[in-house]
Image 1 (cartoon, rainbow, N blue to C red):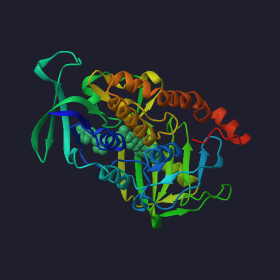
Image 2: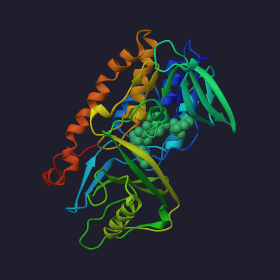
Image 3: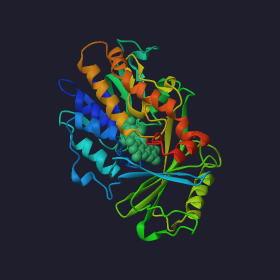
Image 4: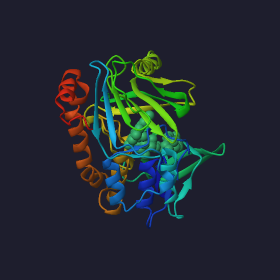
Length: 364
Ligand SMILES: Cc1cc2nc3c(=O)[nH]c(=O)nc-3n(C[C@H](O)[C@H](O)[C@H](O)COP(=O)(O)OP(=O)(O)OC[C@H]3O[C@@H](n4cnc5c(N)ncnc54)[C@H](O)[C@@H]3O)c2cc1C
């Protein structure tokens, strides 16, 4: 019997487990899979790490550290560089580091897969008084655990959210493709009419409505280059991603021999109604709750912020859901603000105007 069962050992789950464990029995279930991610820590994520009194260890940092984001508008062929203090990390090592901070009192199942949960005693509705039976597998064996609270911190494709709640149509889903290339299979040879873009140093964002209504990126990392894109889910999604690579080739980024191919579901809240913090004893945090930037897909800061908000709600010893809602007001307002500002990035005419005028609204 546990007080809290947390599904997912990403930034949200690991942070919540660490902050909420004092005096409580906490079960953390993680499948231990490596997260497909760009591994860019935005200033908001850095600020939260500082507030949590966490200093990033050197072993987590990736090379190089980009000081600028380069924005390419494929329709107008405009290219702009904006200074921005990002931190480039190895995402797997970052997650492992957060998990290494967990106190021994937490029952951490690192290679376990959550399957389903049901209310104890066949109760039909979630109420304050039910316990929840979690079903999971570990080393091929079926296990169950009884918890008072269940937290889905299991990312964009959250099984907890899917089991217990109807996902809002306003939570738009994309497939994120990410191909990795060794640097020696990357050449930068722009045609004479194109500016040289230093893909080996810069974090590059690419906007091309023919490929996606969201955006694409390239990120240099430890002697490799990642080419990624968040593409609407259609039968043509992979073809559209290939179009991105052809476009990049046409402006001088020549790549061959893919080292690793990754894909993941990524969500994008198109309204604050897409955000679901849960109900009664079943709560959602991080991307499982729909907390992710609708403009840049930056999600680590929202995972850290919502986990902290939920831990504070538990630790207040008041009504957890009410406190969690109060504590996430600013986080949700931030998502709303980003959404309101999104035409500056995603409307081709406004974006072109901003890029030509040199305004800074395109900083993510
Ligand atoms: C391609 C891509 C690039 C991105 N780039 C960036 C970036 O550069 N910077 C940034 O800030 N954000 C980025 N994001 C978004 C960011 O990765 C997420 O928003 C963030 O990781 C959310 O954290 P989380 O803890 O809520 O969920 P996650 O990090 O997704 O963690 C969920 C955890 O739950 C585990 N899990 C899921 N289902 C189960 C199950 N059934 N049983 C057990 N465990 C389970 C998963 O393996 C995972 O470890 C990117 C996302 C994608 C897809």
